Image 1 (cartoon, rainbow, N blue to C red):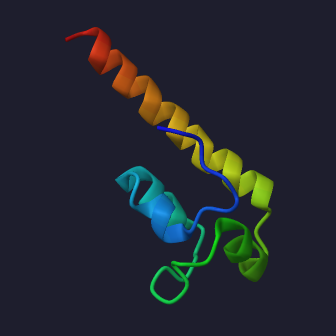
Image 2 (image 1 turned 30 degrees about the vertical axis):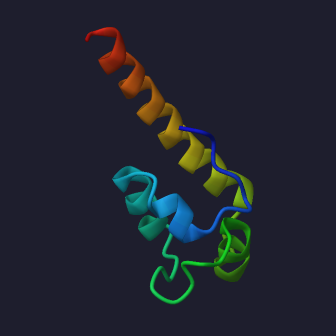
Image 3 (image 1 turned 135 degrees about the vertical axis):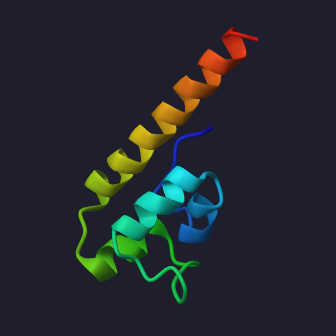
Length: 75
């Protein structure tokens, strides 16, 4: 999975993996009405540090990629 960027919509991020969906909801974003907003816009509206949010989400991407690599190696 590719790393996430500040220009991706919340919807786009949430659809990539359930773990990312869960983290987006933990940030408290309004995923019903603003899911088409970019991560950057959503962070600005909630007063969340964009770099911290992006790092947290991309750490999850790293975990997902690591698990997928392990599964692939053991097949």
